[in-house]
View 1 (cartoon, rainbow, N blue to C red):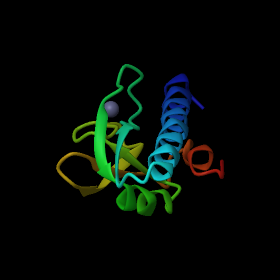
View 2: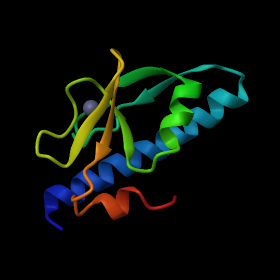
View 3: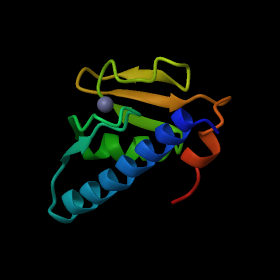
View 4: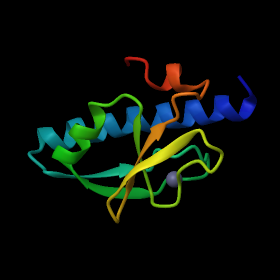
Length: 107
Ligand SMILES: [Zn+2]
């Protein structure tokens, strides 16, 4: 795995874990909208994205799906945009990416 791919994997996993905690806390408080952190591979990005809790939970049913700010999908073919929702895009890690097994592993 190249350094770039390793950085990509670490960054996305890290923010997914952070967002999972935000979702848990929001659900505990009875909220129905989340402000999550962009799960793109850019190490300098900490963009906040507002997303309904039920939509977030639906995305998390798919281990290869990530939530990113529009335009933040990897331009290098590591992932592809599945859906555009205005405030955020849903991307899927490419099935031929070497980082996919790590990104889709159970937490
Ligand atoms: Zn981003």
